[in-house]
Amino acid sequence: MNVSKRKVAGAVASVAAAALVFGASVPASAADSQLKIGAIVPLTGGLSFLVPPEIAGLHLAVDEINAAGGVLGKKVTLDILDEADGDSPAVSQASATKHLANKVDLIIGAASSGRTRLIINKITGAKVVQISGSNTAPDLTNWKDNGFYFRTAPSDLLQGRVLANQILQDGASSVAVLFQSTPYGIGLNAQVKSVLEKGKATVTSIEFPENETSVASYVDKALAGNPDAVVIVSYNESKKIIPALQAKGFSGGNVYLVDGNAVDYSKESYATYLNGAKASIPGKALDDAFKAKLVASYKKYTSKTLTDFTYGESLYDAVIIGALAAQAAKDASGVGIKSQITEISKAGAGKVTVTNFKDGLAALKAGKKINYDGKTGAIEFDKNGDPTGAYIGIYRYSAAGTFKLVKTVLGSTVK
Image (cartoon, rainbow, N blue to C red):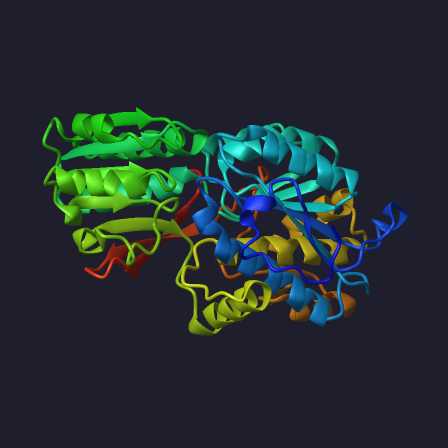
């Protein structure tokens, strides 16, 4: 269904196979002169609670691009499809197939590393650029993608290291890691475990299936060794695990969460239990002005209030840098975007540093070379499409079940 505007809220249950299209469609023959963006995000499934900031970031970026005059003088179109979760693997594959059939030039997503694994070969094999704002699995660094895959979020080699070091700094010497049996969970557990053990902590890792609801036995295994800290690497399975930990008498202040489950728990009955708990989220602190833009964008397209911002900036950056690459190449095709995206992400002598599409467009039209520094940081893609340096924020929960930034750590994503 093609419409100029589509409300996302309230339609989640029916969008697994339907597009949410913004902007008029164009004939396939014009694809090289008009940038067509397809997004694949978790409108349904276990990760859907993280989709509001993603929706906000996508729309905000496209609206800013079009307000500035578009790419190559034409407005950009945005088509959003579902990736679902591990219980519905066919959904993300069908979404990728539909986007490619519609001749998109750039695909943003998937949000989950596991879902990206299902579609990356199809997308990059078609010479369409894929940029994820939240894939963090380390193995995607060396994926054979013909140079068409990029991500604005850092590998979990960085998040795992930062989180583990925080746990060690907090004095824990015995740690249990409850992790989801997905590429995301397996990769992050491996890095956390490695860094903790190098720090002389003992680690017990307990693996559970994605979307598991019967968590009691896993929690019992985690607590059997009386750990000082418990790390939960999951999506919304945390909403079962956290109250189970509380019921067993484990201290909520010694719980550590990650980007997949670091959300607002203020409406949960166990909100106060999390007082003192910590979480790691890729990205640096967002300024209030950008947060306000995300809130306004989400309100515009859903009539709802945005309260969480996780990965909103990453998807925003993914869209902006893809659009600037198309403009720089004077070619909106996947091949054109690929040819310039790494170049415009890097600083260099004689380059103009820009932080938004409007300024980047003006500089390119003036014949200047640009370096895009986004809301997530400098980005600077390496030869594998990873950001060479990135920020990880450490957050602390209050008795209200909400969290605030404690500190931000800048580090290499690959070492």
